[in-house]
Amino acid sequence: MRTRITEMLGIEHPIIQGGMHFVGFAELAAAVSNAGGLGIITGLTQGTPEKLAAEIARCRTMTDKPFGVNITFLPTLTPPDYPGLFKAIIDGGVKVVETAGNNPQQWMPMLKEAGIKVIHKCTAVRHALKAQSIGCDAVSVDGFECGGHPGEDDIPNFILLPRAADELSIPFVASGGMADARSLVAALAMGAEGMNMGTRFIATKEAPVHENVKKAIVAASELDTRLVMRPLRNTERVMNNAAVERLLEKEKALGADLKFEDIIEEVAGVYPKIMLNGDMDVGAWSCGMVAGLVYDIPTVKELIDRIMSEADSIIHERLNGLY
Image (cartoon, rainbow, N blue to C red):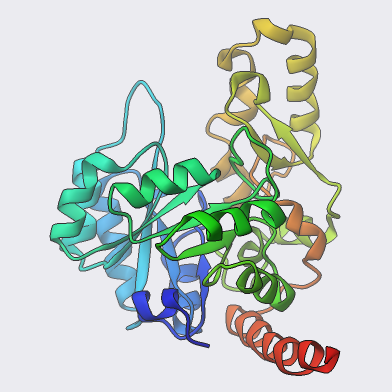
C-alpha cells in the first residue's frame, strides 16, 4: 500500500508506532520497522543524550529499516537536555523525528539541515496548521480517543480527521483509536495517509513491558479509561485503577484549589514501576479507549500482516461489494 507517508518515510506499510514512555525501546521500534512500519524510540525515556545514543545504536543492530525517535516538549522546571538529545539523533543517523507537546519551531533549523523528516503530534486543526507553517513534513492528528494527552477540545477522530483533510496540504496520519484494519481503512477514507498506533503496540510479544500491562489492556473494555488532570488543563487519558480512583477523588474534593503537588504520588515517577515491574495499581498510566478493541497479544509482524491483509479484504471485497 503506497501513500504519501510511506513514500516520505521509505516504509512498506502506512503504520507508525507512537512514542510511549517506558515502552518505546529499541526492541519494539525494531520489530515495527522490520515488519514494514515505522518504529519509534521514546527519547525522554532514555533521559540523557548518552543513553539515547546507545539506544539508537542498539536499535541499529536489530534492524536495517528506517526508524524514528520521539521527543516530547514538556513544561518543566528542569527541562531535559534537548540540544544534546537532538545531537544524539543527528549523530545516530536517524532520519525521522516525532515531536509532541509544545511547539518544536526552535529545533526545526537543525533538524532540517540534517535532512530529518519531522512529524508533529497535534490534537487540534489549528495546531496542525501551525506545524505546517513552521515546516513540519507531516502531522499526527490525535483524536480525543487517544491514550495520553488528548488536548482540551474533546474532538474525536470522526470529526478531526476530515477537518484536517480539509485544511492541510502536508500529509497526516490518524492517531487515537487505531487498532486494526478497520481503523486503517477508515482513516484513509477520511483523508489520512496512514495511522499511528500506541496502545495496540503495547499488547504485542515484543513490547518490552511487564506481562501484567499487556494482560490489563486485553482485559479492558472501551469503558475502562479515565481522564485525569483535567482541572489543571493537562488532561491525560489513563487506564482506570486504584491510584486513578484516588486521584479523581482528590480532584473532586479540592476542586479549583487542586495543584499538581496534590496528585504527585499518583503520577510522578510511576512508569518504571508499572511498565517494568508490573505493579498495576501504583499510579496512572496512559492508555487509549482502543483497549476495547485489543483481544490478543500477537507478535508485531503478525499484527501488521493481519492489518494489511484485512485492509485489503475490506477495500477490495466489502467496499467493492456494496456496488
